[in-house]
Image (cartoon, rainbow, N blue to C red; front, side, top):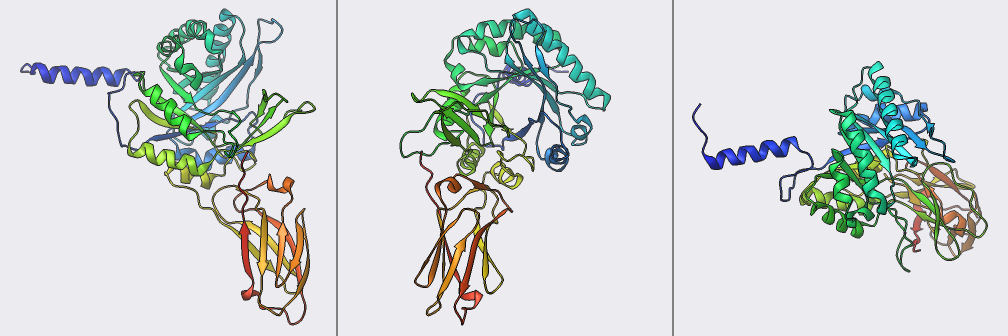
Length: 429
């Protein structure tokens, strides 16, 4: 074989080393589509969870399943463990790579962490293999105090070395990007996922959101400058944050169970805005920072998960388009006419501030609200108004809610002449 020119040989070696080291991307930007993966973050695998994996799991490049949650309590060297009864067969049937996540809620001593994580990794690999599935990655999810990243890197390096050749991935917080030990931490694992959710109360006149798109852009740009490839975890969930009188964050509810808040706690709802996130995906598909290779969605939509997007919304956002928004009123019957508010769109909708029904003169009507709606009759119109508590509720896609009823004086106007105006309310915080 003839010798290769020096320039071509150098280029070939650079490509080979880049392919072997996922932490060293080729510099520059790209316009290729992002990969999309999803977390199956359920402690109880119900039929709805299994159905979600079966119906939509193959739409993702990878699935990350919550395998174990570890928490060290009262100096006990053995952690308390939550071990979901994962349906490995359902995951295997998606024919997608599957990673197992070990969540560390509260750490023990370094040796205790290493021992427990390795034991859980072994258990999860065996459980998956028993159903014909080979785990692709073990992921550590630990919200380490940012001043203790050096210690984290030390015990993480031991875990990574012990699990070779199985890759170890970690989740990282955006606040770690400015820490001097962050790069040391990255060198202790194979891959990292940058989490960009936050629960800072917004400035007056701004809407609360789990993910601020402007901050996210800045964090991703900062991560790109570090020279390591990474993915970004974007939220699909709605959270409730509790604050004390001074504005200090007391806790966050992100799952279906809401904590018992102490007296005087101020609660704020933080939704994930699909319109803003779809714009972010479209932007990154066109031109994204170097090193950003994909998105991790937290979490896979499950029909019974009331704090999460439904599948149509996530599918739209993954495609880089805003989900369809469509609230409408359905009229049933004649005298009286029953009114039902339907969400015919693709995303959860906040209850509107009011719904006005108009009809041509000279008909007059009486009516009443249902399910908490207030009603007032006007000249050739009826107005259904949502009280403050009702306006904090979300109406999921393909779901309905009764508004109330109208009874017209004879002769009643034809149903085709009824006109609807739905007035939304800006949810400023």
